[in-house]
Amino acid sequence: MTTDWIINDAVLGKIKDIYIDGDAIKEFIDNVVYKHPNWAVLLKNLSDIYVLVAYFGSQKYLKDGEKSWKEIMNKEQYETLEKNGDLVIAYMLVDERYENIHYIDLFDTVVRNNNLGYHMINKYEKERDYNVNLIPQNIILSSAKYWAKILPVIDDSGIVRKNLIDDFMYNTNIKPQDIAWECLYYLCDKDEESYNKELEELEDF
Image (tube, rainbow, N blue to C red; front, top):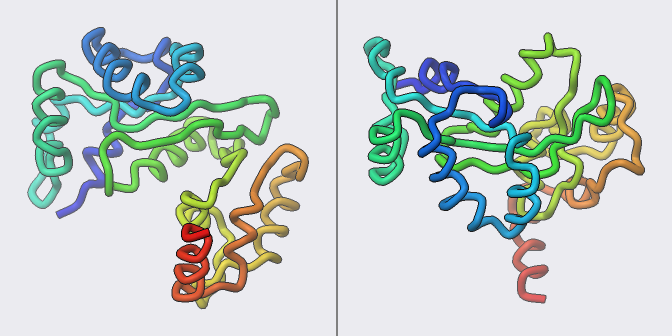
């Protein structure tokens, strides 16, 4: 079964600009924003947070072989979607300081394991005719492997390469002083086994 249609039918936009039920906003604030380590930042910028919103009614248009929200979400999430009619399934806070480069300040998914982060980025760039690169400003160690898979920095052997990171930054006109990608560079030239071993040693330290 595929999730492509129903996720593509989800709507991305700032809270202040798209239709989202008041109860769905309250649910997002109570169960996502206030539980986030940076809840004060999210709350301060609430109306400008980009949210990916699932709509209960989308399931009426599914074709054979396409997954429903009920199959994608856990029981509690689906019951909330059914009750409110819509549900925030992913979100991000974006710094739009440059015309062609927008930086992700905060970024997370509510519904897991469906590559919603990638879908958010793709929707964001597609709505701007792919004239904007949406990239993370800070990459922490726990998310470095995720971003390595999103950004074009892995070679044909599946290894992150420094020259590919440097080429991407050069071709995208990213200013080194604007980003903190040390943890992405940390992955360079490491296979899965060596990376996991070093990560364990760091965690033990």
